[in-house]
Image (cartoon, rainbow, N blue to C red; front, side):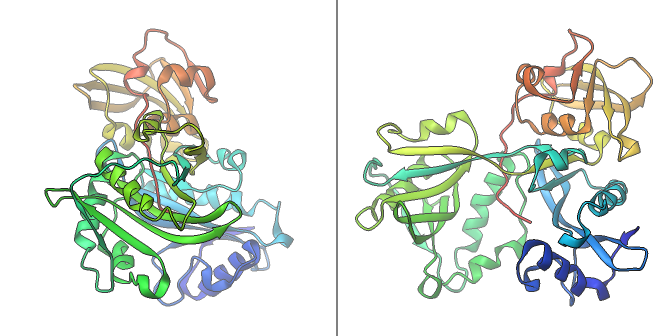
Amino acid sequence: MIVRKTGPEEARRVNELFALAFETAAEKGPADPENDRICHWAAFTEGGEMMSTLSVTDFEVNFDGQRCKMGGVGGVATPPQFRRRGGIRACFTLALPELYRAGYDFSYLFPFSTAYYRKFGYESCVQRLACTLDLSLVQSTPEEGSFRLAEPGGALKDSIRAVDRVWEQRYNMAVRHGEADYAWVDEADPYRTAEYTWLWFDGAGTPKAYTSFKTELQPDGRNLVCRRFCFLDREGFAALLRLMKSMAADHRFVKCELPGGPALQYLLPEWSLGAAQWTVKPAGMLRVMNVKSVLEKARFRGSGSLVLQIRDPLIGENDGCFALRFAEGKAVSVEKCGAPPDAELEISAFSALIAGVCDFPEARLWMPGLRVLREDAPLDRLFYRKPLMITDYF
């Protein structure tokens, strides 16, 4: 087997493998034959036939208030005739150390199998709440403020970006969007697409919330299905519900996704009697690419010191013991060492915990790949629950 990065002349074949693996059109593939800004790795037979591919797209994400480089893994494809021959494993084995050397802090993916990607150090991270709200039971109260519809020309782009900037700094793993990511606002044309983006301004004229939705005929009714649903506070959430409530005569449910977290239930004045239903929806897996860099950027609770032993069989620089000292919530030093560790963590467990999936006592009960060696070690000052959200797919 031969494994390497692909060249521009191989973009078409990368897309063809994607089409075969996912039973879709090649035009939907990850490679751009004209101007490809995505890295692709591929495994080939000894005869030179491409058998497996994976692609990595660059993103900038929020982590504890820091800007971090994240590689979004997509286009993981093997046609049926080449499956179970180790092609994807070989691609990850080559790609992950290269991503470390290229300065990535994290990698993220949306898995077909959590058990499969856990083998490469990824662990379940963000959870979203898939909500269904019965418009006949949703309560709405009058508030100051006004809505504006996104129409051709992109006049609302700066205001939508202002909402996003607050949102993106609030949640770990949220993608920090740049100018190019707002082409959808320029292209908004509700009169042609029947997709409506409404932006809400509060009484002082500050943009606080927006949503994009379409009407869909579904088995449970004629519903408002939201592709975007972003709000900065209770007032913004209530405003979006007022907008949806105004369409209750023609629609039964509104369906949207909210950040996972127990406090979100308090946004709704009534969630019983079928007014609201939600399910927890897994939203991808995270891997730390550079343990030292992430520890240096992490937000601690208070002051202290720890020695962590990280086990990472695919990135040698991450494998070993790290001594860290922190003061007033920030890292003072992070160095590899030979001191006895306070805890041992597989890279998958470390990735999920440093992102903030749960508080440390929960992790001790349920998290695989974690072993505490010193009971009085201040591990709960590093590993604790944090707000998490990602809305981008790749």
